[in-house]
Image (cartoon, rainbow, N blue to C red; front, side, top):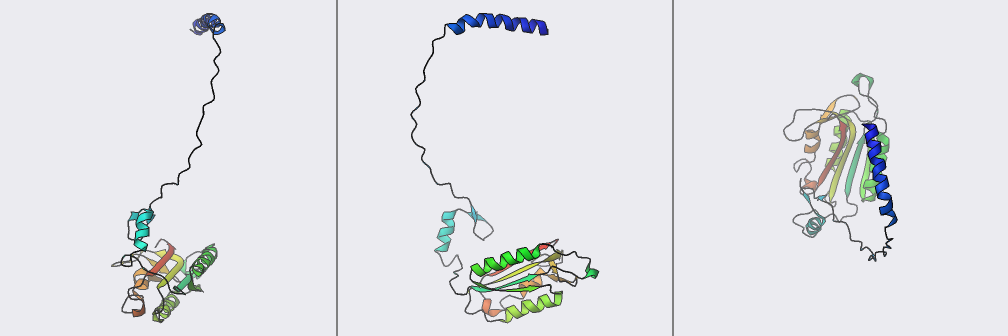
Length: 206
């Protein structure tokens, strides 16, 4: 079969040689191309904070509508508390959170650049975490627009009604996310009533 295949190819080559010699060369003129017009990319969807997504135009319309957006114009904008738990007691069985200090510093710089008054507290027990949050909630936020709480720690699952999960203090005792959020509700912290309260929690397992 291989010999037959080779023989067939040789015959085809002999037949095609005269044909190739009789070909007339053709010179192709270079195609005249117009310069490419660069167009801006189609805007990608952006999160508008309502659980859904919209385009940039929709976001711009929200910015111009005070009924649909929070106006953050005060200087400073508000308080930002960062709780950074890195080292845990041996009895807790929780490992050291290597690298958390780097995250903490980046967050501190970011919120400072956004005109927040940033306070960092490190390695707090569960009780100390609650006390730090209560201290923040008791402050007068009347002349401020917003409040931010950032917690970097280990986490776990916890029973809840509205907000799932819990974060550990350095003593291995958990503080539920629901408790953390409720410290800043309208009853406990009236000066933040009607103002955005942002909670960023980085906690594996929570």
